[in-house]
Length: 298
Image (cartoon, rainbow, N blue to C red; front, side, top):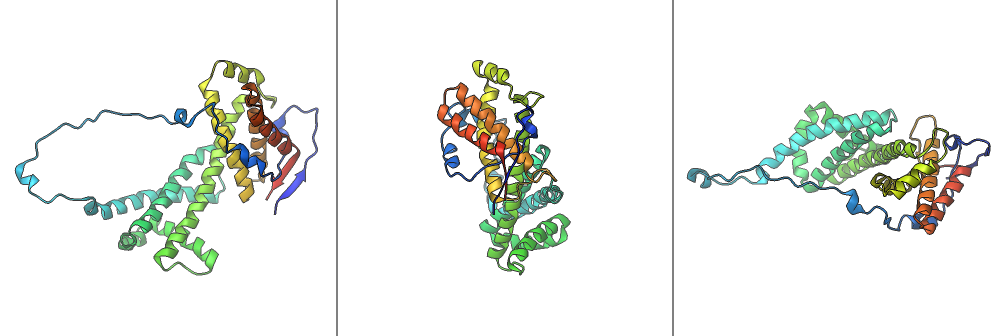
């Protein structure tokens, strides 16, 4: 159930960061995000680096060449054991942050690594369940590995009132675990975007029109990159509200998320007006006006 709370406005205040707001569930909002942002292409977002190989050719001794070559299968179980212990400690760190409901920008990398760790368990169960069973002795003897498995299996038990037994059930348990970190990554991503957004606003809380105009006239690549990210992160913030559990900062009950949507949409509305893309500008101003007036929680 979605609750919409109408918030009184005060035209005398210029500090928009103190306003309460929220949105409706207009299906047209999704159409906005289907359009490509030509101001900053994905090719500009991705940067690659190609280094030269430092390896030199060498002769293989005759007796070595006659020996049977080892394949990846000879190393895979050992590599799985090594990765399992390394990734498990990262998952534990992520769970510690999650249990404390900390989703600040500084936790983004922690949650990303934790998500990779759970993905490793899922891939191992998908790729070769026998290896997972072979490593059960390691899991039972390593505190971190054991705790990770307990976390996942407890989530399964909460949902189905029974512990997972089959490989399929264990796989689903880790999929449930993965969803926790996906949502945590999303929240921490928005938190990081909040910090970046501040540089485009004055201390009073109003939009810094002169700075944005200057950056746009100069073809500032930083502005184009930020606009590209804000476009993606507003969509992400709207999805968080739609799913529920939108509290990023404890005690604010999602108000900081609504502030972000309002301020970011105001910035993008103005930016796209500057570049004469009135259609997208109108969409963002619509989001801005709705979220400025209403506070929506689910």
